[in-house]
Figure 1 (spheres, rainbow, N blue to C red):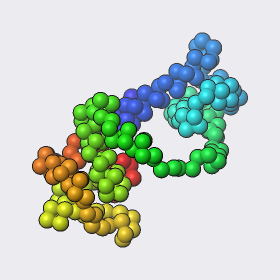
Figure 2 (figure 1 turned 90 degrees about the vertical axis):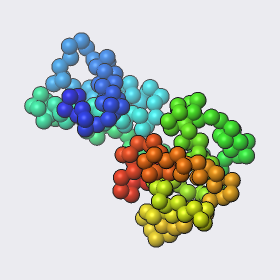
Figure 3 (figure 1 turned 90 degrees about the horizontal axis):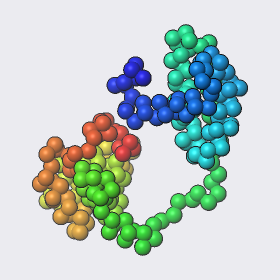
Length: 213
């Protein structure tokens, strides 16, 4: 854990630790890591994780955490192989009943009436409140909006410029609806760092990583 401190986020390190502890609780006291072979690992996956009711994504994440620990154990010479390799479930989820649908009018009203500040706090809640409205009235992706700089706003035309994207069509001029323009004006006036939506984590704003938002 010390070796990955500063390399992985605190949340990732916590998830690694929780996965290892969950596995350790199913093993005899003072169990040696050398005792954990593919059968032991497979029993934990089949008898504990798959029966827990957790999603496939959560189960695979826990297996990946255990596999990561055993990679370190192998590298340091404590064990000879990694019994967790290939234990994950990679079955494609059924597409039946998973088709996306549009929000109903009542659902949209509920979203717009909710106060994100009460749920997420002032820093991100206030940003989300404005992002929802700008996104609804422009059709832009959330990543595109989060990457907006104040210099991208064309005030005379009540529009802004999307200067990044994977295709030529992604780079465009977007007009701002008259109902959304006061929000844009307020954002411009309060910007303290050159971004339209100030205060967001800078990590997601490097390069063309709009998809990470």
